[in-house]
Amino acid sequence: MINAFLQSINKHIIAESTNLQATYDAKHIFNVRAGADIDNGKLVNLDDMAWVNNEYFTMVEPTSTCRVGLILSVPIGPDERPKKATYEHNFYNGQGEIMRVYDLLIGDKFTVSENGITPISNTDLAKGQYIVADGYDLKAQAAKPSNVGFYGEIVDVINRTNGKFYKIFVRKNG
Image 1 (tube, rainbow, N blue to C red):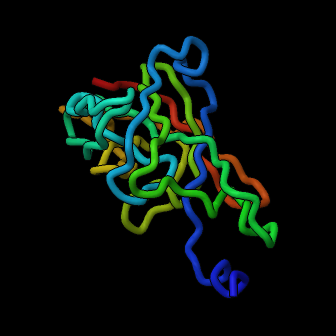
Image 2: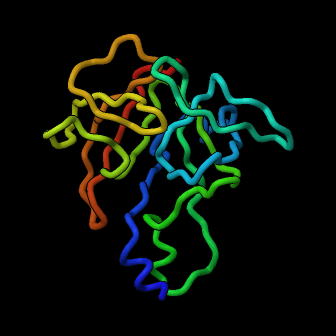
């Protein structure tokens, strides 16, 4: 039964904290309760999060002008069988779970799998394209954005056995 399930599901986004300042000093890491099932590599609105209790915040959808944080929880699940069930592309943050969110600072770099970025229509993702927040999602665009709270730039394309990954350099946040 689980084999049929694993073959029928879409792969979730894989994200990496390539070089985030928050991983060095832990000043800008937030505990956020997932309001819905959501993948690592998605964004949340840091400006409008509300403190709930027990040291966590509410999940708020980003606007085009807000400061954003990157959802990047450690992809650990229960000891599942078969082994395929533990693959990182099967991991997501479930509704109600506390997830780790990193404040993105100018100069930070993070990496996401190809399915984590909405490409420019009829165009492959490529080095030099810009990335903006589109709700919780990352979206590519050709021109340098203006009047946005967050944008980054694809600075590297990485081919791996499990797919293409894109390294994003944060140019602006907030």
